[in-house]
Structures are given as C-alpha cells and as structure tokens.
Length: 220
Ligand code: G6P
Ligand code: MG
Image (cartoon, rainbow, N blue to C red; front, side, top):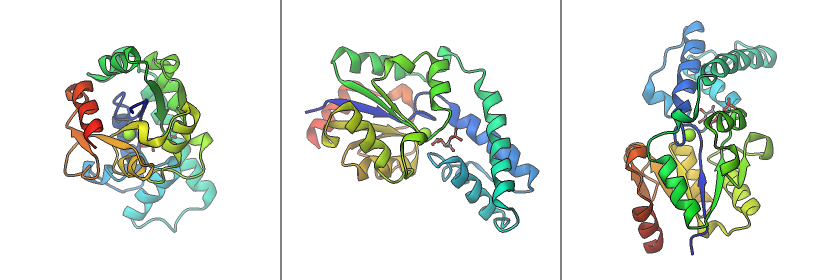
C-alpha cells in the first residue's frame, strides 16, 4: 500500500538543474573545457566534487590540479550557483508540482526530499516548501551518493515507511537507479530513452498525473 512520495529537488521541483548546468559550463569554459547538454545528463544527481572530477576527465585535465585547487574550483562553481539561486521564489516551482504535492497531502501520504545538494535547504526555503515536507535528506546525512540507494532508503527510514510503499521522482539517470536500487517505484522526468530504468516517465512535470502514477504503482 502506497505510503510516501520521495522527490529529488533539482530538475524535478524546480529548474535549479539549469543553474547547476550554467555554473559548471562557465567554470569549464574558463578551464578550456567545453561540454554540451548530452554530457550534462551525466552530471545530474552527481555530487559537487564528483561533477568537477567528471568535467576535468572530459577535458583530460584531471591530473593537473592539487586537491586544494580542486576544492577552490568547486567553491567557485558553488559561488556562481549561489548567486543564480538567489533569484528563486515560489513562482519557480515547476508546473504540475504544486497540485501533485497537494494531492499527496490530501491523501495523508508522507512527503520526503532526497537531494545530494548542499544547497537543498536554501532552495527549498526560497520555494516556500521547506515546511511542506516531512523529511529532507541531503548530502550531509549520507555516505554514498546516487546511484547508491542510500539517500532514498534513509528518507524512507526517517519517514517510517517500507521502501516498497514509496514512489521516488527523479530527473537524473543515477537518481532513477538509486530509486530502483532502493526497491521503490520510479517516476522519471525527462526522456524515456535516457530514463529507461524508470517505471513511468513524463517528458516534463506539467504532465504528472497523480491518478496515473498511483494506478501504475498499484499494477507494479
Ligand atoms: C544535485 C544536482 C547536481 C549537483 C548536486 C550537488 O544532485 O542534480 O547537479 O551537482 O546536487 O549540489 P551542490 O549544491 O551540493 O553543489
Ligand atoms: Mg535532479
């Protein structure tokens, strides 16, 4: 029996995934490394330092920096990202999300957030959603990032529900893998091809249907 929904943040609840992309792209260009949106799919859901590492590997520059230099590169990206997210207001909640959250609430189901972003609390506060969720699990509370299921399992545990009673919502390939690894039903936001491991995929949040999700969950 369905008891909870656990959401990813960036690219699901709000378009902050775009700000991550823009901030990484600016840093990469300073380093003479160019990347496109296809490569960016590999960064979605991936922690800050791992993302930097992937970008340096892409540019063949992974051996050129000391750990301290890498830390300052990551800090530079985060400063830029921090400036970009200052514009976030409740108007930036993506289409379809507010009605879905209301529907979940009206059924007395639990709500969890599973984001590896260290900016998750700030973004949730700016969206006016921080107090709407029963639990927010971020990078500080986990040892292993997505695709490891740890973050979704931790959220379920804190909500006091079994993983099999949860639906996870994600836009990242590694995020969908984490949800499936946790033994949950996975709803993907994005392309069906990219998120092939999800149980149900919507091209964008505006198409999310509570009734359809629950129907598919019950059939699974
Ligand atoms: C989320 C985003 C990633 C981001 C990661 C770390 O998973 O999808 O793009 O790199 O969080 O975010 P942070 O705000 O801690 O740098
Ligand atoms: Mg995401």
